[in-house]
Length: 159
Image (cartoon, rainbow, N blue to C red; front, side):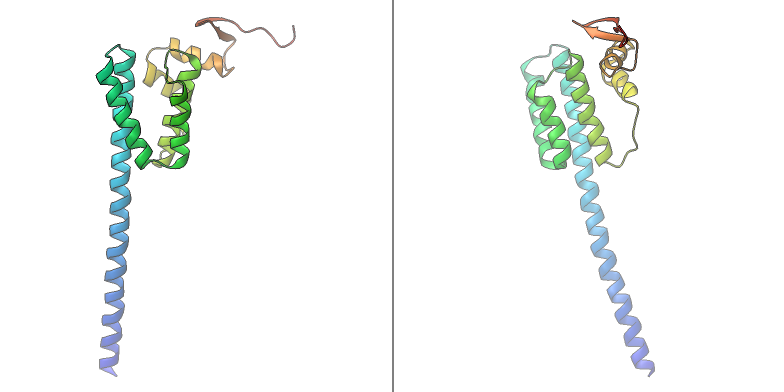
């Protein structure tokens, strides 16, 4: 009887060790994939800033490398958001900035982060408060609207 209890305890312990090893391996693999995605996102943000700053072909090459890695490591939802940005990859328009914010927001959600205020993200990505006002104007959260890159008073709906 004691031998049976000892063998049962050994078997349960062995199953626990094997299951723990499998779960640890799975968690490590996921964490490694997330690190690769974060690195690609950081490189994309850096390259976008460099392209916007006029750094030319080498910055465009770094951007291409970064989005290629995003395509390898991100979920289909994140890939679709970056594809939408890639269709017209500009940060000089309100629409382009909104698409980039959506792409980074989707990536943040995939990485398990809570929702962040889009205006805060706009200020961090594009600087200052003017881009933030332009973004809010597009989203109809201010009494202004962006027309030709200039903020003008939003026409009232009652007129």
